[in-house]
Length: 218
Image 1 (tube, helix red, strand yellow):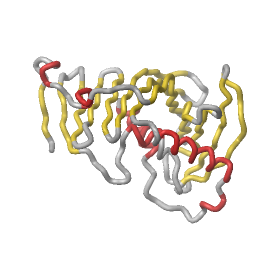
Image 2: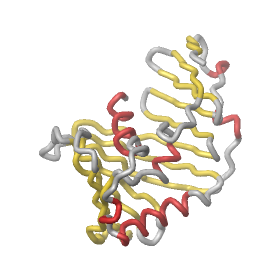
Image 3: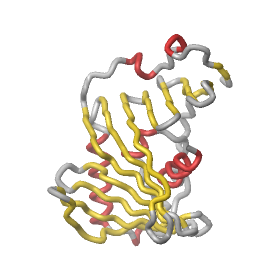
């Protein structure tokens, strides 16, 4: 699970440092990324399922997990093997199934905080150089591949590849290439916008988890 969060941080956690090299970015790539972000922000709610994969430098699969995420405004809920995360836009409940323990913290609203919403909007920023590599077919979809290189060379990764569904203008998958050789992929399997989601889904209900230990850090 720690590796899963490391991947998310790699993907969106470099959103505060401005680069002086922005002018070298590919305007075609920026147009595509802006289009994905703009479309996602029009959705009132989103339900998505995803697969998180880890591979070594030779392309051998080391692990694979599936999960789901629901979002509504600033509220979100994430389910992945062994863990559930709830946020009502004010508090965050992180439930560890193995320990039967939930930790409560305040939601960090700063620009460099980590939320699922940023996976679909702020996955690119001025501290990346990016270019459009071209298009490729994947089943019935046409995917646009955007190669992103961090301007901060001290980062543990050297490339991020973002794949966008050309017709749907939605994020299809992202792959982070670590300097160590490992590769971390986040694949969106399904994405359903504007469905009905009860606000209760974003609050941890102690009654549904008998014997749970509550650690309140607010």
